[in-house]
Image (cartoon, rainbow, N blue to C red):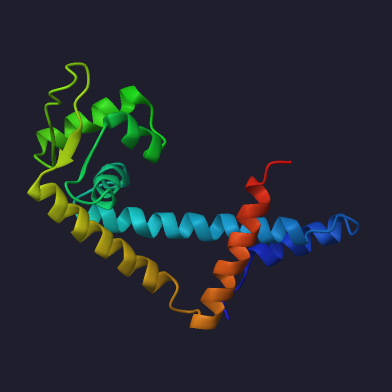
Length: 165
């Protein structure tokens, strides 16, 4: 088994402040480390695939919307937690790359939905498949029952963290 730097951190604090109780610190540190490692692998895969997470966010949001893969920019901004001005910039970039297009709205001259082009749909599908492959590789050290238990525990944790008091 590999050396666990978090265990070393925990041991050091336990030695210095024996009454501290470092179990929560260790758990949160492991969650943070797992997130950082996973994020790094995903970013690397996106770069290898000629994309970015920012681009993937928009393309995959439109792809998940289902045919005709069209949404209002404000809805995409909410789904990706991006400001309206940031979304406009991102849409401009994706439109210039021929991955999406603005679709005229006959009912409104102020706003126009955006839609995936064929190239955008193909790229979003290629990217999501490569993302899932990276995620599967990252979780291969866990058995199916361990993954199910991890999912259950993380769901419980997230529900507790996001519950309204």
